[in-house]
Length: 305
View 1 (cartoon, rainbow, N blue to C red):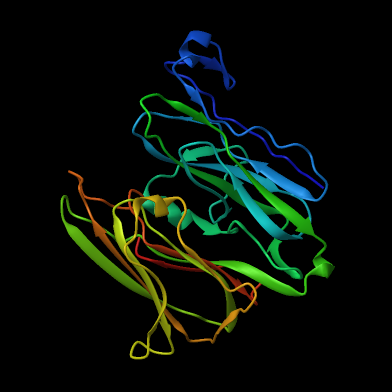
View 2: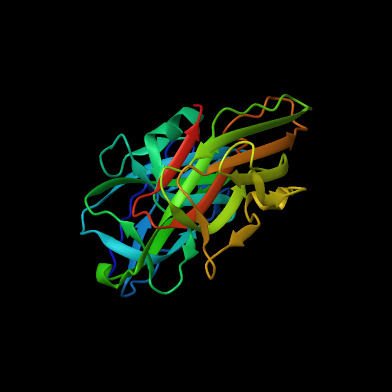
């Protein structure tokens, strides 16, 4: 089964265009084409395409395109993100403020994150595990690119899901995201922040990873029944610039880690800036990302914004 949803944003201005088709070949000579090829139709694969857009040299850009999934509730056991060079992430998010399908918005501002909720974490699950993708849902494909080249790049991303019958799911799994939008790293200085999230139900941890950008120096997650009984769960010290795109991941797929209702998860981040401007979200981030077994719906804890 596959439902491919494809849309593009018109690329006007200096390139010249009509209905998303660039009509000045000479202008394209200056553009690096990083668009992901449209995936081949495969049984049991559900694909969504993101917006087609330009990222200028040196630009840090997050774009969101609204899509509708009008099928039935389905389950998937593997989620994949397909991006071109310069891609930071592409994910499928739930829309708290639905827009017409095909709507494309710049969502680089930290305030925009309140409009969305996480629906997927790219990861293959063990046999018998499945994550629910609700039917009739207004969703958003969010693509983040950082162009470090001296030429514009043209991008288009995809997210894909390997589906499974709902009745074959023995254990439900869902994404968990713990993050703060309240961060500021002064120019040429260091800074730290930490925040707590409390679990509202029993669950089992399957995957855990941290997310910062290239100015991060340390990422830590502690866990415990109270603030006086926290123990180290995840530590990357030192954090390195390449972890922005490929962070260390701790997997508990074969031996899920139980976390009881009321458990505190404390995320701590540290940075050292060499920039002339204050670093704020989304230029820098402090986010704990994971997959948990038990709930059918995603779990989020957002601090600030």
